[in-house]
Image (cartoon, rainbow, N blue to C red; front, side):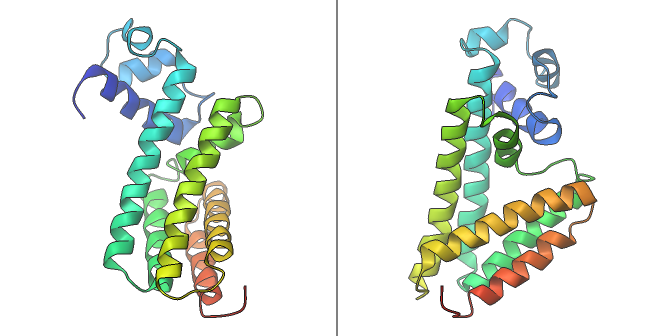
Length: 187
């Protein structure tokens, strides 16, 4: 990701994911990105608020790309849910529980006060849910949209539990529970 603007976005995304938006200062982001002090307002005229939106978009694409790649090579929806959750739990553990879901972090901190962030988080969650819905529907699951919503909600909640407990197992356990939901039980 070359260029100052892109480095700043990537640094902000990483720091927001680890520390939250409120816990991350603009100067810290610029230092992390090895960017000049004036570059924030040069590239983001709306300041930190605009950067938050850009970082969320960056993270949303990164996660959507990972999910799409996984769904492509894992046609069985149950196996895909378990594999994705295992990868998320592994990332948490490898980062010493610092790197949670960037969208959840921003949503929890800002959705009540920042309408643009709330709307973007809702769209991102909707996009991810649609990816899961499409995969389930393509494999004959009835009620795919409701099941996808349950899977996404359960995994996102488990990520929060895992992070505060400093244990990746809640994510792994909930994924296996969600896989049973996909066994054909009525929605």
